[in-house]
Length: 135
Image (tube, rainbow, N blue to C red; front, side):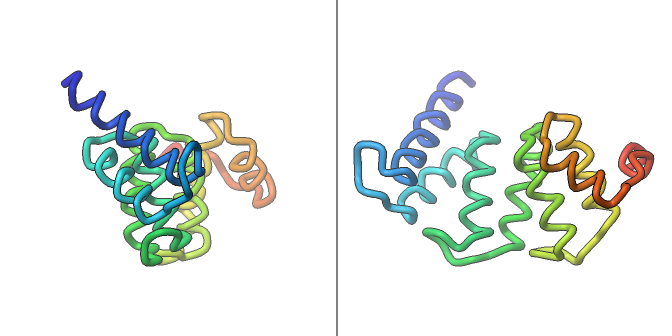
């Protein structure tokens, strides 16, 4: 198990360096390659990074449905930014059918995790936390 975690972490860091140009030229396609390797090993941070690339079409073909899948994988592990981004995807119907209840649920989880943006979204809509808690 430890070796898989180390490999995932190394792949994630390679992807991050390639995405940001830290010590190398920016190469988003190659960053996606390394994020994907780490994501398939279950690393939430890599799953979120890969989902973001798919959602924005950076380095990969834009595929919002696949972005949702990767955001869900990261969110299920408690990744707060992934939970927030899932809320956005459900609220805006990006990659999934628009679903206000699902959006409230994911924004609620993100707010519980400390996301000020998610909390503001819920407050602007006067969303009922009971909807999220019952899901």
